[in-house]
Figure 1: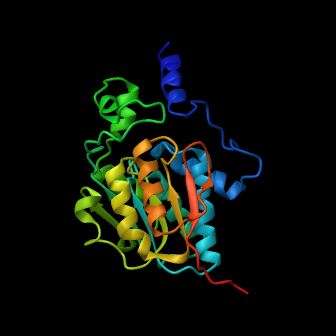
Figure 2 (figure 1 turned 90 degrees about the horizontal axis):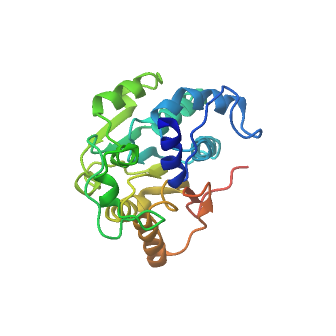
Length: 254
């Protein structure tokens, strides 16, 4: 009964609960990715498709020699940052810094625009006491995230944990040059703030990943408004909610 209830809640958010296997995933996914994903899956709510997009982003910026650090805004338990660190390490690319921005106390209060794709107010979801409320609040401590990232073996001096709301920490504490920018703070205000301050620092040819474009109306509005103002980019669909874009102007590698 409990399992069926969880499945119904997750299905409403576009997720699926199923037993994982070491070879689970679409047949075009490389065994190397599947192995890394297995290590990170317990620490993320992100779909395997969005994790694969991040993996491919790491391969791209390494192969194309796109300069800059990896930035993630909204990390929950750190699963996506773990995958990025493990992928970089597997390539011998250990000079990039990985920046993790989060309150490390769960989601801050949303605005009126912050509603699910079905129109349910985020504030109402945050107030629920069931599994949907727990997943929406996304509480994970800084100590837990640090411990999870430590298991990757990525150089500890390259890992930067920035605690607080992004509206307070960015741009004062942020790298000057970014190669991968992953946005997963869900709400309108934080997503718009991240784009305004960090998109200019994303290197040409760098990768933008927006985790919740399809699920949260606020995040989608922030992205659409921002690119309507600065100029369009091709937002490629990853899955029902994730979107990916390459920043125009990247150099061609011969």
